[in-house]
Image 1: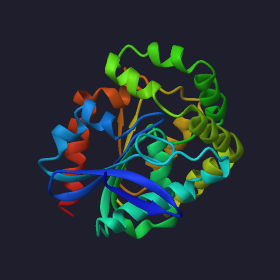
Image 2: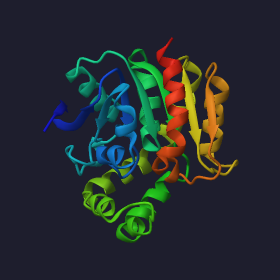
Image 3: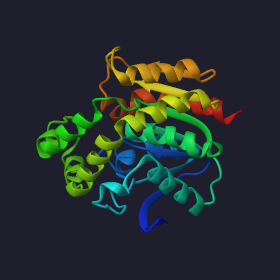
Image 4: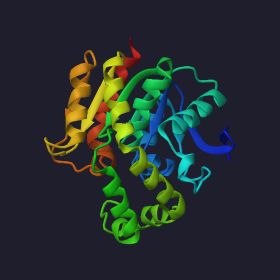
Length: 255
């Protein structure tokens, strides 16, 4: 099982396809298998070398139960350890939801790694701690309520280590404002090609405001608003979002 190590934590990864490296970062509480299930891999691997990663606490990576084992910086360093293992010096990156938080972390701590970035509803909000805790408080009920997941996908999501997920939840509660501040502060420092994908977020929400700020402050950033899609659907409906992603990547790769 391929893995890279960071400070004693094993980080599972997969590599699919050939071409310019494209790092694919999903959201809570998924794994690399979601990128296969929702056809990102099959529809991108002919043109890009896809690097798929399970964050610490998820999938086949190690799952610490200590809250102090989770932070944006640690997760960013996990990803950099994988890229070093693969001798990849620069890459494009896509991140949905929590995956977007990690992209901003990469932009903060390792900006020279990034060729371009695709942010899919990928900013934190002040309500995230409450939202994650509510999900974990009725995890089975929440997963089974998501109609877009197959029975096999629900089984995989339900197989998550709840002690690890609760440690992640405690980290988000503890560091939520720090994460928001990191995202907010780094936006003005980014000058690589950027595509922002947004679901039907309320205009008054923290997430909407930060995503719009990303579009406004990053030079020539592109924006695609899928007002008919929910937060999860923005990831699940690859048939709708991939045409935008492919067009953006083709242009960013040609520069």
